[in-house]
Image (tube, rainbow, N blue to C red):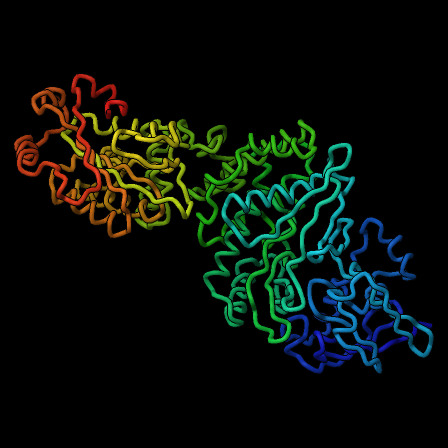
Length: 637
């Protein structure tokens, strides 16, 4: 005979519903007192409450589950949950046995976790408020442990997967979040055994008596269809907005989460593995819950080397079935700065450091590098799909080794040009300029890394001079010199500051080449417009900008100076390449016609002077005979 027991479902000391449970801890019947406090937002549907209770218990298949149940005199996880009064460290719901005068203060795990409190009923049954682990969900062997500064969740490694990789994955992803400057994540640490393996990882609970986790599945009231990510996410964002969270902040969070999950191949970002934090008294939404639970990532269950084609067909328990489909839910493609991710080489060294075998670390880093290439293609507006990979790309893909592939570019100039022009037009990013400089000028792609440090005051340097005086070569060598030297006093004579790897060279000559290779119509005004917009956008995004153009007119120079100072740039440099006009005219023979009389007049009537507002004006005497080779940065002495 299965006996029944009655409980009041409470949220802290607020009555929510009355439940009748059998001795196996299964819900037989219920009645709702306060619908707005029901676990699934404002839902009193039977299936929602039953699912919430079932999901709350330890899942079948958990390592050591039988031993844990035996220790507590239970036969099923739901019975263990019932005897533990349904208490959890992630929220403030609990069961009060009917006719018992108990309060939240008497039983909550934040105060009493780990203690044994006996509550005897007349028929001799005992309810325990003892284990903080009765409502610890997930597949890994885990338990809640209390230290002096609060509660921690500790997860042991699954021996099914080599070297405790799931635990190493947690600290790896923590490092990626740190490098991105992303604050809303759960930091993890690992413990290493005497064999050098990460047998345990630990994270502090981000919940407490004044803030509880509501998973996204419960936020939407459990009313979502399978794999309809766009509709479901829109519902989630809308509910968050109606409950006090900023719409754009929620969307930004989701963009970042989905993008990072793609890069690390997180196969377990289901609707219970993200959510919001809520005030349990007022029910006000406080924030998105920090990103957590990244162990099932980085190809943890793969034993073979990955290829692009295989990576494009990955299916798992995510917001959408296909990883590539999830990318289409992202609004801001540039939410992840790929310049601030670990390189595949760094990844291999990281995993070896934490006990992963060298062969497996090589497999992980190789697959990670391919995911970066695919993500970069997505950021650049290329369609990434199984079909395109299978029937179009063959051996040549837009990105290879985290750089645009010159071979692919040479065969698809019009496609690259379309991407670049769209980015410039839409103001979505400066990625087009990176492609442009790399693909046409063969400049090392990583010279274009930019700094996002809040302590970095970026610089604007305008280089002016006659055509063929060596401006472009000097601009490149200047950027390369800064990057190579790093910190140095009295760098380039008057330019004395801390140097960052943040230079981008904007060249009207390069822009002309791109437009010449495009199929659309353009004129010189288009070149000037693109150059001006790119300089302004680059400065606003924190780049150090070197602008290379003739710029002999004072009106043009003053216009660019006003752009920089209007943004708040204090470090403004005007570098004048002084060349003999007769020699450059000779060098320019056979090239585009120039109005040499106008250029000569501009030089004579509007020379760069210190009273025009530039912080520094530097004049370099060019050796025109060498300008086709280089005007060396070392010439500034």
